Length: 380
Figure (cartoon, helix red, strand yellow):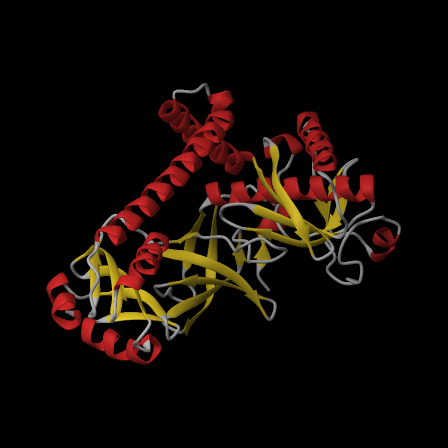
């Protein structure tokens, strides 16, 4: 049985242990030790990584009651090895996991809802709550959670006796009768949990509820704590600062500046659409009538104005009226005809001009990888 150091000392960063087994599995090696500070994945938290001697531990899992440290190089059974955790990663996870307990405990006590799902990822933390909460509810929870951090109270983790557990109002995993481990944030939460946590609430640093959305009859909350929240703030601040500089607006006014820019952009898009429509109509008006095919090459037109051009010029055409935008090797097209079944001809056009498209017997559209010379040679 491996001694689980992380149960008694969540802040143990390095340790010595004896190698009990080294099993090759799918090109990797599963290492078992007589003692370990590496936490195996569980309770919504990923397994620890780090080093065992010169061997990198890229994951830690528990299977059939045995803790397996996965490496890419083998270790010798019987040797003593020095283990070093990637503690910066572990600490970030402990901050977020401990923060989740406080948030879930507050939601349970204030609104009576349960945490029915938890995932601690590398970019954020999600909590699934069994009932619906409002933005105001979550702002209240966030404020109270950060008050808990400021109190810097001690966090307790222990294995209660069956009698003690029966008298405690703890959350989650109520059916566990053996090996029950409780984690208590006094005044905020007491919950069954196997993961390592901070020693005091102050070590969480800060709790930030980022966003929430309706999910399976309740809500899914996205949150960050401590170092992950600080890193997120830095990246968001950097982005806002850059946007502020690009828009020549104060940082606190970038949303209003973006709204104005969006409105201006929409007006420009409408104006550009009108100009493209006018160009298409002008090109159609300037074309001479023909009993054969009528071709237009208009690189500035989009799919809508190509259709306008073809529809407007079609009465002047006895064969296929075709319009193309783009350049050699990358043309968008629209074709229409009153005399040729274009749906039947689409396969031949695609094969000859290296394209893709489809539509109705009267009109087809798509794209071609042909050159202008190839198109003109085929259609004229």
